[in-house]
Image (tube, rainbow, N blue to C red; front, side, top):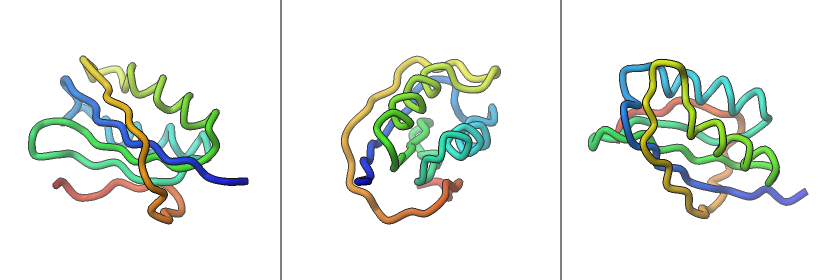
Amino acid sequence: MAREAMRLIIEGRVQGVGYRWWAVREATALGVDGWVRNRRDGKVELLAIGDKGALQRLAELCHEGPPAARVLRVDRSSAEDDGSQGFEERATT
C-alpha cells in the first residue's frame, strides 16, 4: 500500500503544554510514521506519513490537541514521504 504524507503547522497555545508528547502518542496509536517538533515562531510542526484514513484522523485530533493546549489554527499541506519509520519528537527548528 502506498503511503501518503501531510504536513501540519499548529498555531495557538501549543508549546509548553505537552503537545509534542501527545502527538507522538496519538500518531503511534494510529500507526502513523513521521515526526513532530516545536518551531522558534511558537508553532508546532508535524509530518505525518501513512494511510489516508489515519492521516485524516490525526489531522482532526490535532485541531483539539491535549487538554492544556488552545489550538487556534491548523494549516495542512501535502508533503513528501521522508522515509520515517515510527513517530518521534524532534529538536526545535
